[in-house]
Image 1: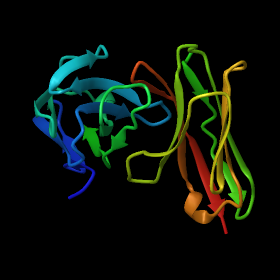
Image 2: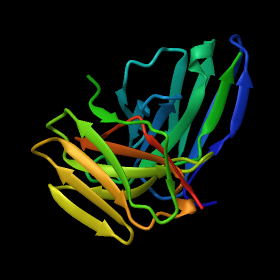
Image 3: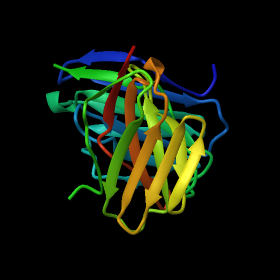
Amino acid sequence: ETGVTQTPRHLVMGMTNKKSLKCEQHLGHNAMYWYKQSAKKPLELMFVYSLEERVENNSVPSRFSPECPNSSHLFLHLHTLQPEDSALYLCASSPGRGASETQYFGPGTRLLVL
Amino acid sequence: QKEVEQDPGPLSVPEGAIVSLNCTYSNSAFQYFMWYRQYSRKGPELLMYTYSSGNKEDGRFTAQVDKSSKYISLFIRDSQPSDSATYLCSGTSYGKLTFGQGTILTVHP
């Protein structure tokens, strides 16, 4: 596997379910990100991890819980989601957090909350 | 006001046309400007990035930044059906990327 991978690619869950999204980067990067992409809206940055420490949390509801056990893996734990949480969830990584650092994105997990 | 404004389109052009994609931004702290391309069912991939005002060319693609008017553009020459995708403009400030809504482009044969 190369680049940034995400599993599952598609997920359908009920509002009472608990599920987790997984992201893995094979690029040796130190920073990882979760974004939400909804139809007709810009990508929204949710969380940023740098060297496994959460450095940014953009007012995301507590029903989304990130976890970064090491610099290669990032999880997004989901519980009691709402239908408006249906979106494409994208993981990205970058070498560091400098202004010029390129972010490399995974293919995303398409989430549907019923 | 959104930090980055981008016309969502959709934009449909014939093969071979010159395509102009545009964004405006409001955050004066933006240091770098990037264009990402996102194909259907894929994540965004970096297409070009620029730092200063002026033009940057890469093959058929030219990125243009005008910091005085807070305007960024991407031009695609000799457009191809394979250029059909969503194009996202973004500005970075202290390592944080802020994206526009994305413009859906279709190049038809």
